[in-house]
Image 1 (cartoon, protein in one colour):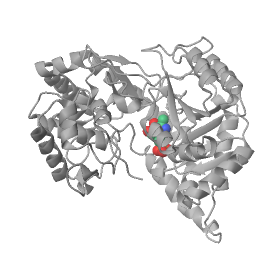
Image 2 (cartoon, protein in one colour):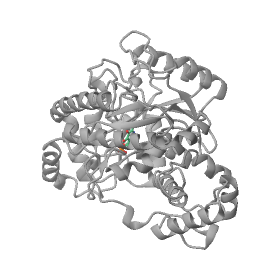
Image 3 (tube, helix red, strand yellow):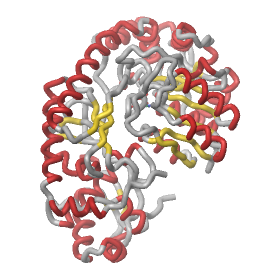
Image 4 (tube, rainbow, N blue to C red):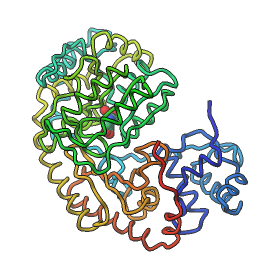
Length: 490
Ligand SMILES: Cc1ncc(COP(=O)(O)O)c(C=O)c1O
């Protein structure tokens, strides 16, 4: 059932919208457009009436009318008149983009943290898959649990990593996001709590909300050095997790212990052990997203979380290690849980495509082959980005990631949304910090991926510096920021 957004909720989202770089109506329209594009304003909801919004913002009604007219003209408000118009996305704004590369209009896309296919390995795997396809053609083609050779290959990798696993404990999915949706709908009922790291992966928050569960967050310690090994690293506040689990009894926890997105932290084995114990005593199902686990840039030795308890549900994917276009991921769980997950999966789709799974089996069997080069490239790009940030944006405080694809930067002021709004003027596209949290948190943070080659990273950082300078030069902005309340952390 489509809903509506009340003025207070919209104003909360607009907190530091007044960036002072042009007419107020245009800035208001720009920020609403951004909020629609990045999902903070849902699609198909009606905005507050012009009069109510003008009153709440202390603006003239003409300004709000002009902003709404501009949004309508651009296709971000559709149907009806005035406040009965609903949010939408114009078809032309969906870019035919290559994630992580320049999109056709020349804008560097820093909103995606993803890479092109790993060398020739992916193409070769598809060629080999095609030669194997005839063996599957006599079957019906429906296989809700996944092609056996792929499940066996994934199970063998877990076993080799110290987590004995049978093919019956693996369910193949169309990527990690699909896997999370299946898990949520199996484990967490409507209105039940789901504990998340804070910050966390934005699409996971969207999935939790769309499953009608209630995300509750435990903050990651500020700028912690994610010390690993047998020392008790500071990457996660396990005490806070234990206490939240005990008091709020979440049905499920969705966590990213392996090169956490966006911070790139890794959880120590000691913290893993304590986390598993706490979840067991609170009856909370631990679900870990290991999508980035293979992007281990510093060669940190940890055991997969499932090594500490058979009750852990693990989600994996080839999207970051090989290519997101494979749309291949998996869930590892007990065989009983897999049976329940398959039952949920068939309410959504009846299985994955066969050729992709055959190709994925080849890639999983020789996992390291393309990865060695990928890791080397990423190490160079991480070093380049850290150096560029230190040189050109010395006030920013980037946290050095131990792995993954992104650097989480603390900004000198809460200006992430403002930067994101003006970024296209400087040839870049950004994901604003609040996308990674609840209740408007992380306005003072920005995730910067190191997925581009060094020359483009330099171009991107120079663009970030120019955008930052533009904000610094605007006295109106500085005033707005001073008046802005501290970002709430839910
Ligand atoms: C932590 C995390 N989980 C899941 C995904 C989505 O993965 P997939 O492409 O396999 O659906 C991503 C992609 O960025 C991610 O970073």
